[in-house]
Amino acid sequence: MASAGGAVRGARGAACAVVVASALVAGGARAEAPRAVCADPRQADGGPLAGGTDAADFGAIPEACAGTDVGLRLRGTALIASSKPDFYGAVVATSTLRLRHNIGRSSWTWLSLAADLLTFRYVVNGPVASDGFAFGPPTLGLHRALGDWPNTAGTAYARALLPLDTARVGGVRTGFELGVTGRRVLGARGRAGVQGGLAMLAPIDVVGGQTHAALQPVALAEAWWAYGPRFAVSGGVTARAEVSPDPTFLALAPRVAGRYSGRRGLSFSMLVEAPLAGEDRTNIIVGFFLAWAAPG
Image (cartoon, rainbow, N blue to C red):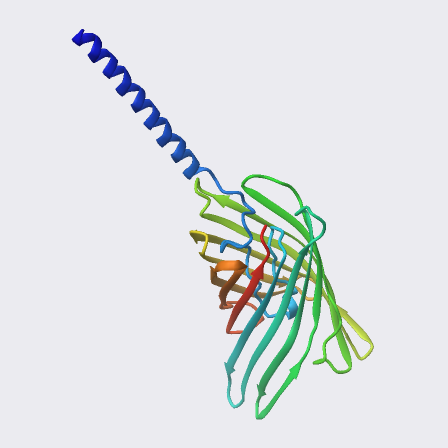
């Protein structure tokens, strides 16, 4: 009888151990399950922040994931270069409003609109200094997702720079942009990943009745890491060149960014870029972003 009771107790203990082990394995599997590459748009690990010095996000690699959001960017750039006997410098401050909106109920196609609301320029060229305010120009973009994969997202997009700029007198600047952007989640927990893209820009300047066009490729590659859903950091590099009509390397700029996502879809971000090489002599680019995103 004692041996039978011991056997029963042993069987019960083994069953309990199996249940506990199964629960731990299941819980571990859930904890290690990779997060979808296009997760909640209100989380901090969103797409790359718009950088560069061009107007209204023209040439800035966009997000690979869809979303409906509105944001305000405050960007400052500084160019300081000294040479004897003259000094040349420029400080530019720009406020940009940006909107994105999904077309239809799916997340396969969306529109983007960005406009420089107000730009202040202070330029010193030798003994001459000038300053002024300007509005525009805007950009309009159409984005289309390329596929639906668990760990990878890809998007093709087209963007147009519209010739509405009060800073230009006697000329206009417009252009087109075609590109692809992508994103991939790395690791079992989905707290890190890589993102970036490639684009070809065709800026067009019309001055004095003459048209000047160019072809400029731009590339962005960066890695990101999320500390939970509220805070994320990223770091990478962007490069831009001109292949026609005058082959020129324009800029190579390392970049670092941080993003905090609060409640109700509000987020605050900061981006710093420091061009190291190229014809663009801008010393530093700093952007502050305040945005609101609709639930996914």
